Amino acid sequence: MNFKIKKISLHALLLLGIILLAIFFRFYNTPNRYGFDYDPTRDALIVDYSAKTLQFPLIGPPSGIGPFNFGPWYYYQLILFKIFFPVDYSPWIYIGIVSTISVIVMYKIGLLLGGRTLGLILAALAALSPAETGQIRALSNPTLIPLYATLTIWIFLKFIKEKPPLWMALLWGLVLGIGINNHYQMLGLLPLPIIFFIFKKDRRWIKIITFFIGIFISFVPLLVFNIINEWSMVKGIIFYITQGANSFYVPNRWLYYIRDFWPMFWSYVLGMPLKLGIFLGIYVELTILYLFLKRKISAAYIFLIITFGINFLAFRIFSGQREYYYLLYLHPFIFILFGLVIAYTFRLKLFKYIGFIFLLIVLTGMTLQSIDRLRTQEDQMQFKKEARIIMNNNPNEKFVLYECSNSQRNRVRGVTFFLNNSEKISENGIKIAYSNKKCPLPPNINFQDKHLHDINVINISHISDKLLFEYGWRPVTPKTVYIQISQGRL
Image 1 (cartoon, rainbow, N blue to C red):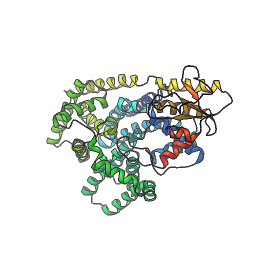
Image 2 (tube, rainbow, N blue to C red):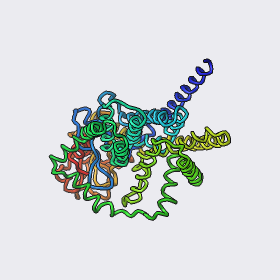
Image 3 (spheres, helix red, strand yellow):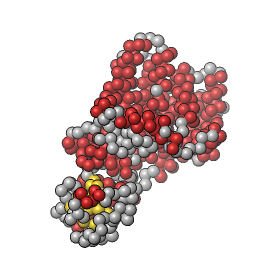
Image 4 (cartoon, one colour):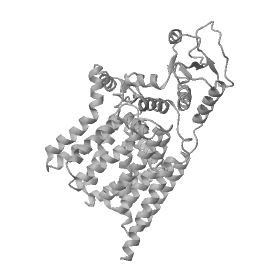
């Protein structure tokens, strides 16, 4: 009895330690580590306006690769969190919380697949992976994918291993649907429910109907947007599939795909040097093949491997850009496959120490790379400094910044974010702009104020909006950014 109590306590202590590590790597040096490029500041301004006015868009962020948008659930989550937790960096904090929850879900996946040891291994991999901790610096819709991917896999395993209540089929559809709304890469997990409904016949049709009701609910806002906007977003997706994807050159030979792309991605997720990643990748593949031939691998693993294989082939056929943040939904599969091999190695007397060494090497590499992702982001500090200079030069005034072209967009929106946090943004405020050679101001204009110190900010209040618009200048406020997105403008 005493031995069992100690063993349970040790397991709980290890799990608590992993969760605390996950929290540390997701919240240490915040907010200084948060990135402030175009997407984060855009989304933060939208969320702030929506939370204050209780307006919820029917559409989400625009895609960076085609003329279409994603669904609005990414914004819905950030807006609701901002309403109940109204602090300046609320959206980034939500991303960190969601990422921490995904570590716990990975632990639950490990319990269903192989027990407590595998649960701890998967949780540790998810907690320390630089591919996961690095996402905390960003604020963009793909950053929510790890949670929805892990939840989708966990519910799938619940149906495979157990007999959960019918409402979980509704939850499954809702989780997968919201995940797809967040980013369309989640379509890669559709084989999971298809496989389940093919092989599991118990109350099949009622589960299928309930599952699709969940998916339908998640797509209602996007459906309404398309109906009232002449299916503009659907047309954009069709255009991208038929023409846009081919506009990018991607090395598409099998040799490059297998020899270069996947080893690099595998090493990136597991935080290893490329050569070591190739070695461990081959070791994992051979071990899984051995387990399959010896019939020592469960049906649940086989279904997951089939799903991973479908995505492996589909991504080879896909002719568009291959970026790592398009593959966030595959992180759980890499953790599961690596964890399976390590957990199996632990059970072998002659090899368990080798398995422990492999796991230690991976966790050490992950930790070192995750530490590197804790550094301060200089752009944020600069934008905050410039907002302070603007306020100090006009302490009793409010402002509205104007942008033109892409050359200063990050800067304008970053400074706008900090001015807005101090309630210094107003559509009727002093109109200011950064000097921009790509978008010159109207000729023969005598500026009221020249540059503020060394940040090249000019007072343009005396220039009419009509004239500014003719020269390509637009105001940037939470309201204008919200309107742009809510109308589906890219």
